[in-house]
Structure formats: C-alpha cells, structure tokens
Image (cartoon, rainbow, N blue to C red; front, top):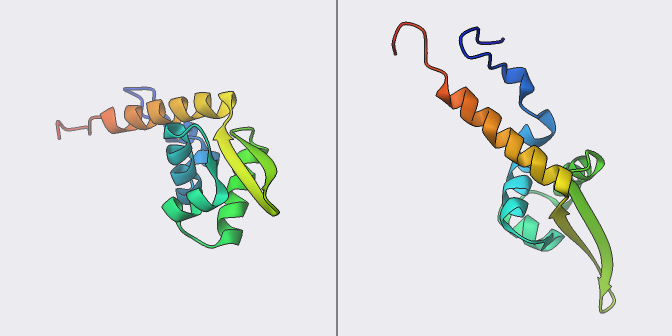
Length: 108
C-alpha cells in the first residue's frame, strides 16, 4: 500500500533485486570490479544451480554482465554490474531508505 503522507509505495521496490540471493549478489558486485562464479559462491553460499539461476535472472534483467572465458582448460564466468544494474542498485537503496524513513502514525 502507498503511504499517503510520504507518497512511498513499497511496490516500487525492485523485485528482481529484492530476492535474498540476488540482493547478496548485487551488494557484492556493487563493491567489486568483477567476480567470478566461485568467488560469488564463496561469499554468498548456496548450490551451484541455485546461484546460477539467480545470476541468470539478474543477467536477463540487464543488471549483470557475464563474460564466459577459459582459464587454462577450465571454463570461467566473470560477473560485473552493468551500468543499468548500478543505476537499479542505487535506486533500490534509495527506495529502501524511503521505506525506513516512514514515521508510524501516532508519533511512534
């Protein structure tokens, strides 16, 4: 529901980012130039399949760029925030700040 006093509408929070694993990936990538899959997995946890699914959702939304390459004979995927992803991340944080700034009715 929209908060009439502030105009904040919680539905404006980006659902693509708001999932826990995707939120963790966006947060990690926002502070890193780039990270490979294994680095993300070490910091975020989860199974390979679960993490890959969430990263694919971020990639499909245009928030994350994935570069596939080989290191020696092993495949490696490196992820980084796209410009649209960085913009979406900043907007997501702004909207969370708006939500946290709402004062309860009745002076609480």
